[in-house]
Image (tube, rainbow, N blue to C red; front, top):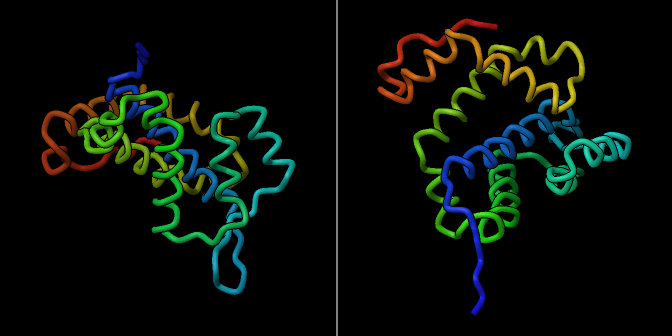
Length: 169
């Protein structure tokens, strides 16, 4: 009899999905190229090598995106396909990823990441930051009392009851 231990941990699946989505956003932030009004991902071989050294697990996503035209739909499909092929049925039981995508915690964390990105866009645009720098900056930002309190309000009461967004940089 074959026995497989695939995780049922929705919170862990949400964390891994969030990291994939953050990485995809990082690629779009730093590696877009405008070709006659159409945006393409253009990651140099040197950058791909560096990603392979530092984020080997995410390198296949960078390779999938590299050279491709960027649209919202295509990014969404690529990220979902990548996450599904790496996590669904491989690391997590097949029913876990849909639950993770639909979980309130994942939605709050995605919202918080998008908020962080929006609040820090000017700073992030000043110079290139490696993906691990993004992860470190987000982790430090998430430790701030105002951010923790805001997240807690979102989790407990939903976005409508959370009040104004924190202005912490």
